[in-house]
Length: 98
Image (cartoon, rainbow, N blue to C red; front, top):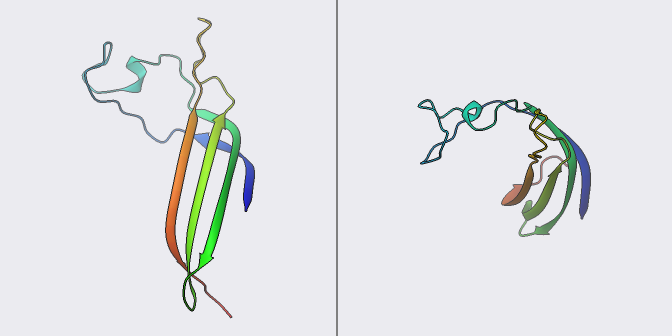
């Protein structure tokens, strides 16, 4: 089954750890991405499959690619920061209802 959609995302938190030049003592994203936006919008492409197992159980597999379309950096420097995400999901489902 093919899946295509759009998305809108909002930042709910951001922290960075590690030995990164320019990182402040709090691990704040503001230290590296001054003037960053806190929302994004874009396209989602993906596909999934459900395979019946036994009785009311099924195996589900899903893969998606999120393509962010907004520039996440709001400076006039010319740099472009965009989000790109591959995600994969697998699980066991249970049919509910009649």
